[in-house]
View 1 (cartoon, rainbow, N blue to C red):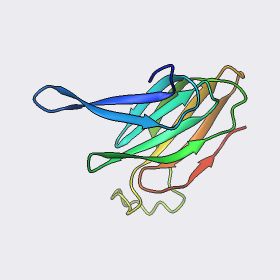
View 2 (view 1 turned 90 degrees about the horizontal axis):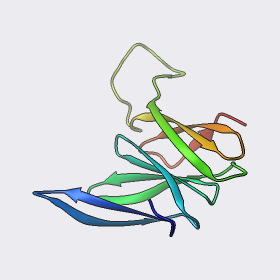
View 3 (view 1 turned 30 degrees about the horizontal axis):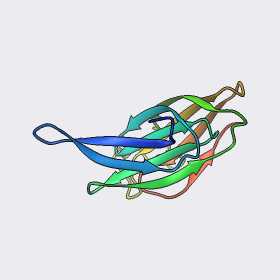
View 4 (view 1 turned 90 degrees about the vertical axis):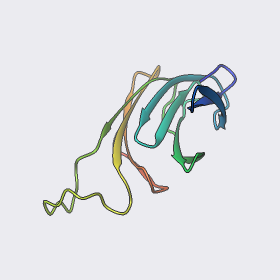
Length: 126
């Protein structure tokens, strides 16, 4: 992440090769996290972008808003909670689920549920 709001990434082949840039923030990118096929970026523009890598391409899965100050830190963990848990541990068709925690200079931590292969998310915090 950089001060111009871009996230640059590299691919590992025989050596590290510049892969491209992710555009989604209007201000400096202050923090990054990864989980599964996701790259998560937090910014001075008060937003969190969720990027999904699929087939060598990145797409913006969601832009999470709600903070009143710059997003300074991110953490992510796999979400094992399932409302319809039938004891079957197989992955569902919608992909892995993650809980993303974002901390801001507005003195808040927000908790978000993100599904790796879906374009919707839930904000579980205030």
